[in-house]
Image: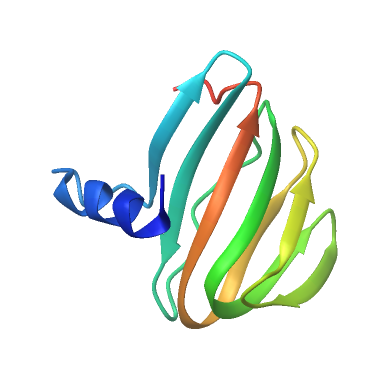
Length: 106
């Protein structure tokens, strides 16, 4: 599976209000493409699963557990379950690969 294929499949989904589009789900893990536009507010709240984020493109800030860092392409971020976190001050539209383990509960 290639990023272009994932993005094309996501573009065909009808609910455009959902920021994170899941493209893989098995009991142990789920994966999605999370997209935020420049200046957009990240609405997420803590999850019951551990998460890994990989920034594919774009730039902004990321705060987890009270620590803030600048993020851009290639940034690899880990968030433990139930820890407050969010992307903010989005400078460029940002695409992020997100992995949940175990699979995110819908």
